[in-house]
Amino acid sequence: MHIADVTMFYAPSSGGVRTYLEAKRQRYRQLPDITHTLMVPLTKGAQNTAGIVRIPSPPLPFSNGYRFPLRRKQWVDRLKEIKPSIIEAADPYVTGWASIDAGNALDIPVIGFYHSDLPEMLGSRFGSSVREYLQKYVHRLYQHYERVLAPSHEMATKLVDMGVKNVHVQPLGVDSHLYNPDKRDPAIRQKLGLTDETRLLIFAGRGSHEKNLPELLSTMRLLGSEYHLLMIGSNMPTHLPHNVTTIDHFVPQSELARYLASADALVHAGTNETFGLVVLEGMASGLPVVVSRAGALKENVNESFGMLSDPHDPVSMAHSVHALFERDTLALGKRARQEVEQRFDWSAVVTGVLGHYEQALGITLPQKPDEVSIQVP
Image 1 (cartoon, rainbow, N blue to C red):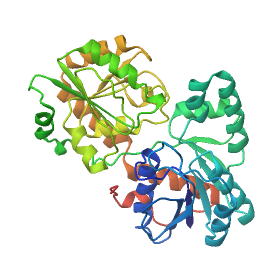
Image 2: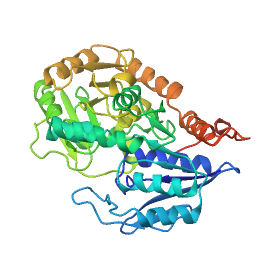
Image 3: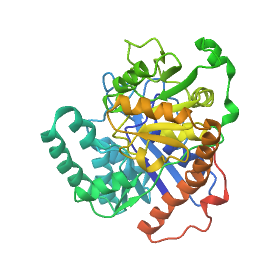
């Protein structure tokens, strides 16, 4: 089986999509019956790597390294050259349509993975008419795929409501070797100038509109000096309460793992998450979590290891943070990690994805993916 993954969501500061693709690549390299090709935009300074095809694409302004392909032809031509058995498209833009065109030309199945909730992401900013237009666009694109994978039941339901057929839930995963409580580093609290009594909260992610970062800042104003929030990622806010510190740039996963393990809890006010990978990474790091009761977050978090707050309500979130620390947070953190180990191991995720490929192609692989453990570099 020759698998081609195609996406524009692959840049030096990429998040969940790149993590997912790298996990697949590492696993596939260990299977003798699989060839894997990743097709992504060419970025400045990118090194030639076996199995990665890089297509020149113009930079997307203010996007921290992302590039936006404008024409399908070069993508289609390269896919026709490498002749995969199956294509997985990971974004709803030009490369998604190019994957469909190449699949039709090669007479092979094409699978779409719905990583980004485009109608909600832009509709929440620009209004209901934009949301309705994009819902029609999603239906028009995704109806061409052999099957559509969604990372949560929330996203699968949205796709079905938009008229998309053959939708399957396929959660993402977490590298529980990398994200581990053993990475805790006391020097981080010292560098932040925190006392032993101060409760260190953490958030990591891009400072985009749908993350609702102003609401997190309002929550911290309500919580006061007993709590401190460390926010990590590009485009962080600049006008901050006294109890908030930012690291305003992308950090490597190994460094993020150290920061997460060194905090006391993770907070996330986002309401449009398709999966919420950073929440699971925090849980793997042994953190209890406080999240909005919305999107995919409400599926992956329950009160056996965290708290759910009302969406867009800093008062509710502050109350939930207070309530969390009235409980045994160490015990909650242990249960959070157990949840990740039981439900979101990368081996199980890749097994599930290959199962979708097998069904689309009508074949069965002789070696099962869960026989080999994987770690995302």
